[in-house]
Amino acid sequence: MAEIVLTGENFRQEVLESNVPVLVDFWATWCMPCRMLAPIVSQIAEENEGKIKVGKVDVDENGELAASYGINSIPCLIVFKNGEEAARTVGVQDKASLMAALGI
Image 1 (cartoon, rainbow, N blue to C red):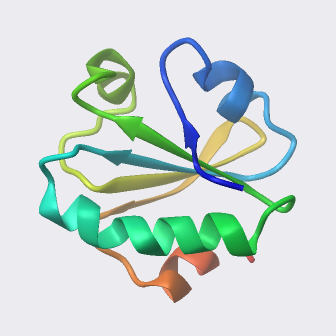
Image 2: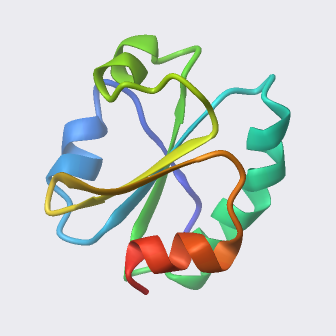
């Protein structure tokens, strides 16, 4: 399963109303650390299909959504469980740290 492209229009349905944990990657195309983190995020999405969702929010295209979650630095990854923020990391993280935040 590929990452879901999240926007203001689908965020509630895909993230807040999800019955599985959701890892949301707030990123931008010009952000080198975001691009370094992207393969790790993709790998987590592929290896955990059915157990979690992984979504990506382009902060340039969805500035209002990013601002509503106080995104000041990217990459910023937020884990949502039952519609609530459960964990947040900023900067490049290793796969083990992200898996621990997801509780997998």
